[in-house]
Image (tube, rainbow over all chains, first blue to last red; front, side, top):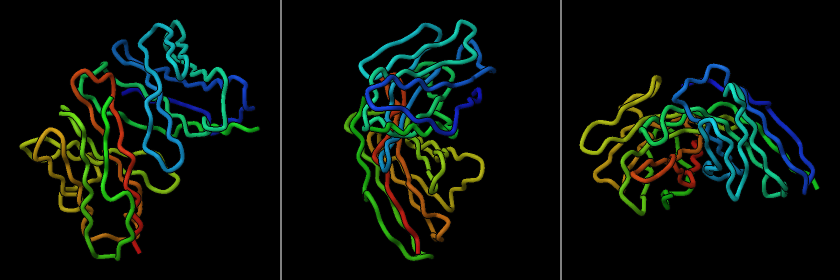
Amino acid sequence: DAKTTQPTSMDCAEGRAANLPCNHSTISGNEYVYWYRQIHSQGPQYIIHGLKNNETNEMASLIITEDRKSSTLILPHATLRDTAVYYCIVRVGDNAGNMLTFGGGTRLMVKP
Amino acid sequence: SAVISQKPSRDICQRGTSLTIQCQVDSQVTMMFWYRQQPGQSLTLIATANQGSEATYESGFVIDKFPISRPNLTFSTLTVSNMSPEDSSIYLCSVLGQGMQTQYFGPGTRLLVL
């Protein structure tokens, strides 16, 4: 699976949009981009994933560049409960049995 | 998605002892995984638990230290054997099943070895 690069940490003001970048310049054509987050003392929580089109769900939006070498996770109105470590992961297949490999992630601190 | 439970949620153990962690899923799943998260670190895959056969271990992890069982499609155990303080970590169960769009994780087991 391709490696990803994320900033170690970011701050965001409560109520503002949080934009978390991820670089995956060696991504292959059959690799998806997944985002998870881990709130302190909990197991990782799935947020969203995509292949090449932008995706949106009730939690977040995922913007993938046309060349697929980078992506941005957007939390439109961050709350204090969104403080967590956010992991960007690329993985072959959509449900092909390939396990997730975690990098360092971005520690997002949402401040009042 | 799936509802995943782990027992115990946390434990404090003495060095040299062993602890077995249980993972229960509310539906049959194709694959079950065990991860370790050392203090302040990211998650590292220990092994894939295979039903009816030996688990598949990642580099750096061996069966003698981390024996794994998977007797059916909804249950797995991970044993941390002959523990040392370096085994103090969060151990996480993860599953992937038919109709699931991705892996889902249990709440984790916090282990402290003294």
